[in-house]
Image (cartoon, rainbow, N blue to C red):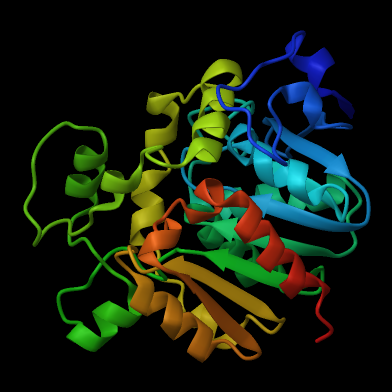
Length: 313
């Protein structure tokens, strides 16, 4: 079931910056719809949809949702049928105290495919969204996927104490304590770099990134974050190690996107070197090459994404 975004929100929304080629109002994204379906454990999940052509499904990262992808939807809708899934406890979807583990999120993605009758799609994950896709592949395989795109996600956030430094770097691991990392995310305490080693939040800003400012403004107006609901999945997310899936189960053309500011750019290169028929795309520091690169540089990103997806493999 889908309805127009304007009918869903019962209003239009004006964004702070008027930018060439990007929407200034929600209504500028013609044909934008909000859909919903119910999972087999009774949770109502929403998704954003626009366009026509091959299905392209975005799975956002932790705390992210379809509103933050408004620029990408606008730029890609003339080439693809674009979907952005609001995962449970994210965005417009239900907030519940159960099923908050990556395996359940992966099942939700599988049920979304079924609800929309998607036979085959390109799958693009960002941050935790990559982990959800890796969980989906682990459970359901790749028969419904045409190509993969992974944006800046460490194969294992948690670092085991008996790993070599090479293993840690390849995995992208940057914490030895899930509890300390969660407390740091929520501002509940301090930790040293031996416990959590990331400057991720230094880049969670809109400095010289007006497109990102627009998408964050839309998010703030129509689906602000529920921090209590978002916390519940973090512990499970931190402790998963997806290297076996990457080594053994990703068998479709794959693009790995990261940036020179990323704390785990070496692990992204490892993914591209490990997954067959895979390549990496590393943004420079002058190109907002940080964890939020696709939202800060939507025109550059969508151009390169389209070139990869349209390329014959």
